[in-house]
Length: 428
Ligand code: NIG
Ligand code: FE
Image (cartoon, protein in one colour):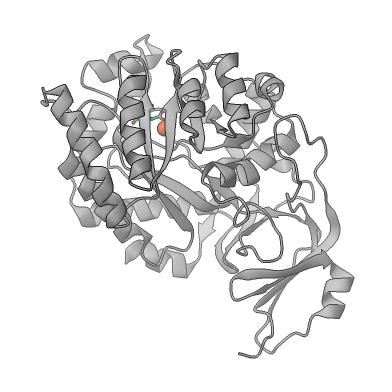
């Protein structure tokens, strides 16, 4: 090894997101390095600072790639800590049914919704399912996402959920961005299965094997009135924890279900959705360091009020932002659109929204200190925007202000298109 860096990016308006305190309401302005530069070696950030100083301290090699950012904003790669990207088929007619007055849970109870995607996913072979999932993950990268959580949950029975975990393992091979795996076997009740206790025991019983075979990092449950109760959720997540897996939950998405309180009691990494969470629940989450994962795209698409930033500030909770990408309640891949919705529909400041899409999101995955910042020692995941002002992320809503995306120091997307290397991975 020559020791020379692989990449140097300079003349960037750098927003490292390295604030020491990231709870809601604590940060008003983000620190910025005007005319900043960063040095990448072996996929990691070696050094950051002012362009002049960094260039003076760095010995370039013949193969060092130099990128002049021409004054554009440089922010950490986004961490999307909640997606259901592993599925087949769209649900466009359901969108109109909801417009006509049918409820999300009503459609699910009638055998549609999640159950429709379960049927469609079962009907496609593993190769095609893996390919379309790779294509989706690559698309998230064109919007600046460099770490993405992907859940199972469109299998519902032990056998079908195992299949999804195997496909996810296949998708992760040679992935250009990091994929964090969550097992969501308790996403809905499997149609045709009658014995409640037997089914729940079978699902709990899978978890030790899932861990032993290293098929997932965390376990999630859709804890909601009429779906899985707090008691079902508690038992499953306790089994998950006993197996050595991290735990989290879909909590209080549409109706108050004591999900936030349960997340706090279990010491979950995060609780997600929270549209119907109580203030006591949010306070308990803050006290127990449970991250509040906001999914404003889902609130938008289901015509619900987003969780107000003001309530999260009052609780002092750490917020994260995620797309919740899925075919029923949030078909978007865009973290910039998610940040725009957080600002314009939930009252986040731009600083809070960017911190929630980077630091808060990393914390929600237990990856604080290794993702979500531009700092020496961290993986070189960063995004160049098409403007010097990072707030273009919340301004250009519905458009893509991301100019170039680097994951582990490699260019993965530019101007909305993935690189040839990433395309080869999609086609692999
Ligand atoms: O997070 N609420 C449960 N799960 C997903 C939606 C899944 C679907 O509708 O396919 C969510 O909104
Ligand atoms: Fe979800």
